[in-house]
Amino acid sequence: MINTISAKYLSMASSFKIKNLTTTFDKKKILTSASFTAQQGDIIAILGPNGAGKSTLLKAIMHHFQVQIESGQIIFNKQDITNWSTDKIAKLGVFYATQNPTELDGVQLLEFFKVISNENSPEKIGFYQLYAKITDLLKSLGLPNEILTRNVNVGFSGGQKKKNEILQSELFNPKLILLDEIDSGLDFDAIKLIAHFITRNAKKRITIIVTHHLEFLQQIKPNRVIVLINGKIVKIGDITLATEIEKNGYKQYIKGVSKHQEFDIVDPYLSCHKQ
Image (tube, rainbow, N blue to C red; front, top):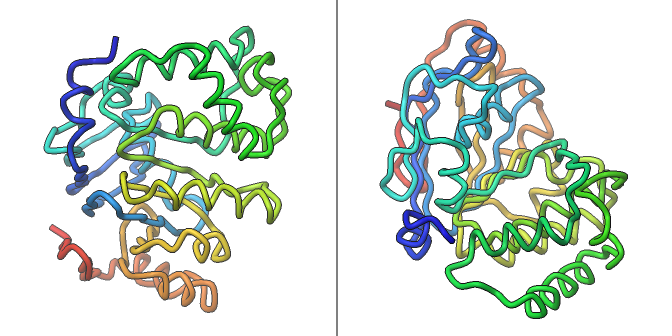
């Protein structure tokens, strides 16, 4: 049965805020006083060099066991979820697709879909109705029906794993979706397909995406781009910021961080100021 908290808040227009978030991993500081806000319909791209803390940011939102939150707040739909358990956060309507989707040997994909669908739907869906929905999604994503008889992600190609994450998100119908390099390792056609699924549902949720590819950003058209360097948010802008970074790289921001430069972070869309 769906969690009562989820039933109450899934119907709300979503809002999200990270305020002065500082995290550690294995006692090493990763994020430092990260702050930004989002509203339903936003597509936010998180950019930064390897090791900047992008994946850590998404994991912190989900209260991943590898990340320790030292200070700050994570607020979703007016609820402070900073210290909530991962399952409780998920039931509130948050979906996280990792860079390397986990293999669940012994768990059949169809049974897995049945569980997540029933756990996150206000009403129970009949099996045949659910199966029809799943097979339609499989066809749209270019996945074979026989994949349903296999164990979750076991023996899947990289592309199949990423498409399976998108299929899960369609069944989960989240209010906040976190996508960590969902485009990595995919060919052009698969990237275009996944971008279509992301954008077609963007108005009914908040979408936060970590990526390194301008071509992907041009397809999903984020309304904001956040640059993360050494665990610090150093710039917030629109997609032209991504174009500038592709041309010039991160060197000016890395240099500023290394010199302990204070960055005046102003969100031009939601008046989000560094605090």
